[in-house]
Structure formats: C-alpha cells, structure tokens
Length: 468
Image 1 (cartoon, one colour):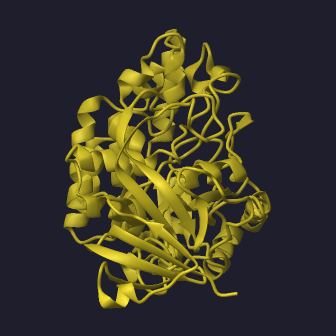
Image 2 (cartoon, rainbow, N blue to C red; image 1 turned 180 degrees about the horizontal axis):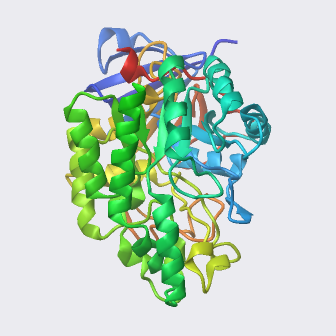
C-alpha cells in the first residue's frame, strides 16, 4: 500500500535556504516540495495531513557521535540502543552514528559484529557505525579496507587513554596512510594522554581528588598540542582528518590555521562545551562528577571561540558525544579519585533544542543551525542526499519544530536513561512537536508513537566534502 503524508503551511529550513513550502511524502521518501498556496501544492492529496502553520519544517538531526552501551571504566553507558534512540527521536534526531569498539588483540570484525548485534532490532531511528581502532597492526590495517567497502567509512583513534584505546604516533601514521588509500576518514581524540597521566598521578599524590581536578589536569595546551600533531601526521600521510569534541580556543586555532592552508581538516564541537564550563565541574558535594567528560569542560571564556569557529566554518559539526552514566552508582565510582569517574555526559535529546536556543541568542543563523546539526554531519560521513536535507528522493526524516514553545530542560522530563540532566533547569525557546523517520511518525504532537526495530542500519559512503 502506498502511503502519502502532506506537511502543510510551515517554514521549510535547510542548510541552503528557507521557504514557505508544503512537503509531500510518499513511501518513506520526500516526493516533492511546492510553495504553500501554489496550484501544485493545492492539488496534492494525502492519507495524512500535518498542519505546520507557524512552525518550522526541518530535516531530522544527524548526531554523528554517540556511545550507546559503551563499556568504560568498569561500567557501561546507561543508555541502550533502545532507550538512547528513543530519546534521540524525542529531541528531533533521526540518525545516529555510534562507535563500534575493537578490543586490543581482537579483530575489527569481532568488535563490529558485537555492535551490529547490540543495535539490531532495538533502534527507534536509523543508525550507522564508526569503528574505534585500539590496536593498529598489519592485520587490522587490511581489515580497514574491507570495512570501507561495507559502509563503515570512518575510524576513530585516540591520543589519550594509554593502556585502553591509546595509539602512538607511528600507529596513527600507519592508519592515516591506509585511510589515504581506501577513502576512509580518520577521527581523532586529540589530547596528549601520556602527559595527562603524569599530571593525574601528581594531582592525586597532592590529595587533589575532587571532580574539578579532572579539568585542571587535562590542560588546554595538551589538547592544542595533540591537535597540532594530528594535523601534521595527517599531512605526512596525505590523509583527511576529523578532530572530535574540540573544546578549547587554542585547538580551534590549530584547525583554523590548517584550513587556511587548504588542508582537508575538519572539527566537531559539542553542546557541553558551548553551554557548560569548569564552573559545573566545581559544583559542591561531588556533583561536579556529573560533568566529567574528555576533552573536559573549559573555562567559560573558551565558548566565544567555539561559536566563532562554528560561524566561520572552522568547526563544521555539532555532535553530542552522548555517553551517559548515572550519578548514583556510576559517577560515584570516582568518589575520592577523580580519575575513576566514568567519562561522559548525556545529551542526545537536547542538541537540537540547545542549538535552536543559540539561534535565539544570536550566535548562529537558522540555516547554520540546520547545517551543523543535520547537513554537515550527513556530508561528513557519507549520508547526505539520503539524510540531512529535505529534497525529492531524500529519506522522509522530518521534524515539525515549534520555535515559540518554551521548555525547561530537566531529568524529570527527559527520556534518556540517566538520573540527571547536564542542563537541569535551563530555559530554552523552541521544542520538537512531531518527528517522522522514513515517513513514519515516531513522535506525534509530543507523544512517542515509534517502536524499537523501526530504525535500520544505514551503510555510508565516504566523506562528501572530499568528493566534491
């Protein structure tokens, strides 16, 4: 049975333009757009009509950095693929790219298959995978080629976490050389983990155990140094580079300098670095532990540089790095030793709303909101055309967004499987009203109507910024 849905009367916003248009959806895809009130639009009939008068009609968000069910520090991220993707849908995100993890000494394939199994039949929205490389050797380098052919076209390496995920410069160079040949994109966690571990040990010896010291030992300069080193290694290898969760002004400057030379270097930041700061890490009674993530939150003065980077396109993407751990029983593992606090924040549900608030606050334009949240992540990771835009032939991942609604972010009302909100009590203007995933309504007038298993695995092409 062919099904047709018509979204009528809204302001359609994409990264490219804004237009008062009606959107016709047929069999899970965008069939056509036509000016509201035009003869063409007036002639359309549909099984379901959604009134978007005074609302925005935008592409579903693409969150290209999530960690559902991630094992970390003796525990697991508290969102499963089922709970995490449902929360994403509530927040207007219709595609996630999660990270499959290779265990040291094991094959990439083994790690990837484990993630396929975790997600299969559980997701409310569509999903794809990046691959974390934690053991670079001749065998895993060969495996990279096969994964690219399978639609796993990006590989994350860590300059941090010695003994867990860490790769040395030689391993990084070899992986970059391989990516240069197979079309893959290297994603880098850029912090000098060897130096950070020395500072962690020294801080603990001085009795500096509170959460705020997590931010103090993970120095801005060690993020900037690692970012610089990653860029130079990528230049030697002739490979593109994507730096994840950029948090500091000095790291943005390294990316900007590389891009000014015309290098294929890209950067991502996250809402926590745009809206939170070391003030949160210093909250009393161990509540600062809620805000422990890596790279860490920075002093508030770094935020202006991040917003400027987003405006000037020195940063292209805002992802969440959603990796939630409950305060009770998980974050508390680090009482008396900040280095044992599981690293990560919840945020997959809040990203689209926080970035709309940035529009309200004058940091970015409406089209830039859609670019950094939908179009650019889709392009970066080989999904654009299918995801990230509203155009004939694209998947009907569509959000009807009320820019006038006001809400207060809170753990009381969010849908992430975590016992606190990183943005507790924050008032924002704008709220997701209705969400379609491949034409199926998964949130209907603020009611969840989706289901586990609707979301499908989506293989990706290579980075579309490099193909242009």
